[in-house]
Image 1 (cartoon, rainbow, N blue to C red):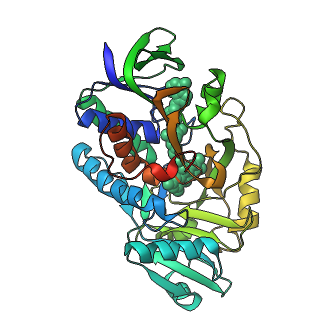
Image 2 (cartoon, rainbow, N blue to C red; image 1 turned 45 degrees about the vertical axis):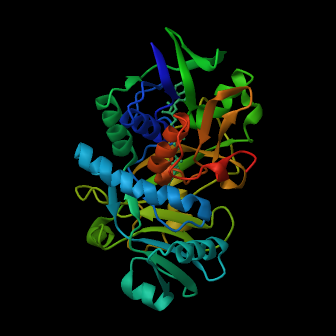
Length: 383
Ligand SMILES: Cc1cc2nc3c(=O)[nH]c(=O)nc-3n(C[C@H](O)[C@H](O)[C@H](O)COP(=O)(O)OP(=O)(O)OC[C@H]3O[C@@H](n4cnc5c(N)ncnc54)[C@H](O)[C@@H]3O)c2cc1C
C-alpha cells in the first residue's frame, strides 16, 4: 500500500502529527522503535508544564494556544484527562531576562497574568521560602499536561480514524522513490508521498547514519533527571489548587533554577522537581537511565531544602529523560536538503511538550500541502 504520509517516531510530536493526519482522512502509517508511550525517550515522567506566555520566544505562543484547545478536544474524544489547570508561577530576580521575556509575551498576546512582589507571593504561596527580592509572574491558565496520557490518546484517535500504527519496529532507512520516499524497516518497505521524522533524541544519529544530516543544526542530547519528594504532613499544601506549577530561577547560570509540579497522585503525594543541565551530553544508546539516590540527595541539598522547608528530603522515585537541545534552545523543523519529501521536527530543547498538539496539527497540514494553522517558518533551520 502507498501512503499519503509516514510518521517515523510516535512520541510527543509524532503521535500528535499522526493523529491530525488521520483526522484529515489521510492514508497514514506511524512507526516507532518502541511501544509509545514509553520511558526511553523524552516524553515520560507523568507531567509537563504548560503556560501561554513564553520566555523562550513569542514565535511559540500560537502553538501552545492551539495545543490547549486541542488537548481539550482530545479529552472530549477519548475521556482521558490530559491537561490540569493549576496556575503557574515564573519566579526570579527582577532583572531576569527569561522573566522579562515572559511578561513581554503575556502583554503582546493579551494573556491574563499578575505580577506579584515577594510580600504578596509569601502570603499567597507560603510553600516557597523566598529571599525577598523576587518578582513573580503568575498565570492562571498555566498547568500541566500528562505526557503519557496525551500520547496514548492521540494514538487511540489516530487508530480509530484509520491510521496504521506499527510499534517495536525501528525505521532503518529512507530513500528517494520517484517523487516520494521509500521507508525501510527490518521486515518491510513502504512507499509514501511525504515523511515526517520525529525521532526525538535519535534524530541526529538516524540521519547521520544515512548521510542525510546535512540540513540538521548541531543537536546535543542531554540527560535530565526528575525527582519526586514525599510531601509528608504538608501534602495538602502541595495539592493542585493550593500549589502551582513553577519555574524558579535565582540566577542565570546552570544549577541556579528549579521547576516543579503540585502532587498529581494524592494517594502518594509528592513534590516533583527537576533542574536542567546542558553541559554534559550523551546519546540514546549510552545514557544511564537509572537515577542514583545520591543524585536526588544532591538536588535536595543544593536546590530544594532551603526553598521548600516543608519537604524533608525523602525521595519516592526518580527518572532520567533526554533533552534534544538545538542552538539557542530553539526548535528545528525543516525539510531534508537531500530528500525534500522528508520533513524533520526536533521540537524539544526542554520546552516542546506544551506545543506538541498544535505543532502536530501544523505539521500534518504541511505534509498534506495545506496552509498551516500556525506559522512554522520561525523554526526552519536557516530561520
Ligand atoms: C525531564 C524533561 C522535562 C521536560 N519538561 C517539559 C515541560 O515541563 N514542558 C514542556 O513543554 N516540555 C518539557 N520537556 C520537553 C518535552 O518533553 C519534549 O520536547 C518532547 O517530549 C519531545 O518529543 P519528541 O516527539 O521530539 O521525542 P520523543 O517523545 O522522545 O519521541 C521520539 C520517538 O521516536 C522514536 N524513534 C526514534 N528513532 C526511531 C526509529 N529509527 N524508528 C522508529 N521510531 C524511532 C522513539 O522510540 C520515540 O518514541 C521536558 C523534557 C524532559 C526530558
